[in-house]
Length: 348
Image (tube, rainbow, N blue to C red; front, top):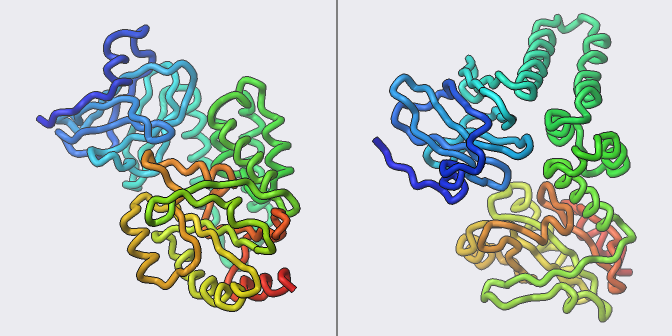
C-alpha cells in the first residue's frame, strides 16, 4: 500500500473543523492502490486517498462555499478533463466510454453540469449525423442558444460562472465581459471564479491602446533586477513581449523579432522579453542558443506565479505591447513580418 503525505489543509480537515460536508465516491479510471488527489484552483490539494481494490475512490472534505476541483493521479496530473463542483452532499463519479472524461452527479451543481454535457453531446451527435447537403440553420440556432441560456438560468451559482469562464468569456471583448459579469448576483460576483475574470477584464482595460504602460521589475539571466521604466523614454520605443520556450507560436516569432531588432535598434528600439517559463535553466539555455540579443527577463517567480502576466491580462501567448517614448501603449499583438513594418511606421 502506497503512503501519502497529508497536506496541512488535509490534516486540519481530518482533525475536525466541523467535519466533512461532501463526499466523492465512484470510479475515475484509476488503478487499485494508486494515490488519488483532489486538486482545487491554484493547484491546491484539497483531499487525498488510495484507490480501493475494486477501483473505487472515496474522498471526503469540507467547503465553505462551492468551488471547482479535479481529480488527479499520483503524479498530480488531472484525470481526464472532467470537473467536479464541490458542494455539500454525496458526489458520484462514473467512467464513460471516453477515457478522458468521467461523469459526475449527485449534487445540484454537478447534476446541472451533467445535463448540460449530455445536451452538448446530443448536438455533437446530430451534427455528425446530418447529411452534408441538409439545411442546418435551425440546428445551429439551437446550439448557439445553449450556452447563453444556460448561463442566464444559473446567474446565482457556480455552474453559471463556470460556463461563462469556459465557453463565453472573451478577453478581447471587454464590453461584453463586463456586461455579463454585472448580470450575476452580488454573491457570485464576489466568488473567486468571477473575481479572477473581473481582474482579467480590469487588466485588459488597463492595457488598451492609448493607456500608459505599467512598470515591471524582473530578473535577467544573471539574476539582476531589470526595470521596464529604466528602458522606456529617452527617445526609445519598447516592445514588451510575453513568450515561453514551450510555446511553438512564440518560437516561430523569434526570427521576425530578430529581424525587427536588427533593423530598428539604431532608431531607438528595445525589446523587453518576458519569459513565462517555469524552468529557468531551460530558458537561459534557449536564449543563449537562439541569438536573442535584446533584454530577456524571467516573469515567473519561484512559486510558479506570474504577476507580470496577470498585470497585463495575459491569457495566451505570444502577446506583445509597443510602448512609445512617452510611455503610451500604441499597438499590441504584432505578428510576423508586420512587427518590423509596424515598428518602422511608428518610429518615423
